[in-house]
Length: 389
Image (tube, rainbow, N blue to C red; front, side):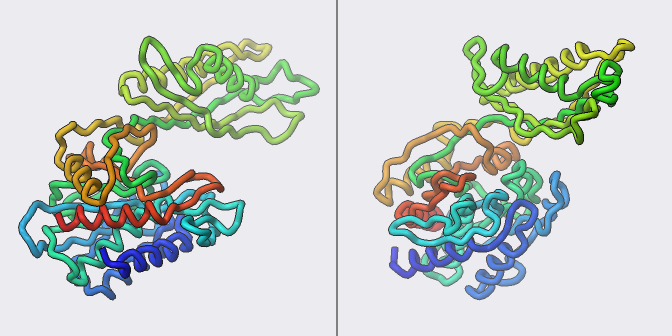
């Protein structure tokens, strides 16, 4: 690979990380990508957006972006993809270089390398192909939205835009020689607890505290081993109550509490069992908290699978191709399973088996996030070889 390719890629990633673009607000990022593609000679009709942003939980500014190129050499169509959104912690980030790393200048923000590094890898390779630097089979370049809030871009992508790729590669977090070939199932739920308000000093016995109901349920889940890391009968998973909101004043028995929780497991049936345990704990707690008139609280659930578990076969063509590219770049591939969701989860579920590779991102979703530029360059090199076949 020539030095100019890596220099351009590094320039792209620095520019991309500095652009605001949390989930649902990716418009400015997409504008930069389209502008660079057009400057490199991409025909207008080769660039398309879909309407995935109108179908997710969070209505967004823009949908997924696809660049589709005909082949200049024989071969099966290949797809390189990455998500462009970042988490709220990355608002206002200012990336700065410190040696071989890029870090946030402000210690109170994340960096956004998850996944602007993947965005840059895919864009850098697309620009190389548009400039005629190498012969290649038919290619699709795919940038998704709203990954961080539930993989909605990949879930609702218009697959017809992609041109039926036979090999698909997702560039996201981690080191470039690690191939993520499977991931956990993830279920998220909103829990609405209803009690009854009453004056906390004058007539507390007439009230039903929604806070008490929620507290009893969470305590039972913790006590019975259904919260945090879960191990039951040789089955494993995790769960978390991540948000709780309710109450306005200390002199009122709190009538309503809203919570958000999740359950995960590589075993789909066990994930469902964790969900049932959470629901049963809240229902039991609601029945147990009563006012002086004998009336108890109530609880309501709304939930969905954000993604189901998947595992690519040992001889899946995209996995073998990725391993070959890693070795071609001097690395030794390692297969791994993720405990988080990936766009590859929905792509695979929807009939496009997709392997994920890292781009040198470290400590994502934290203020300690950084990008290892040595590993980022390696990811760019691997992506280039995957594109040219």
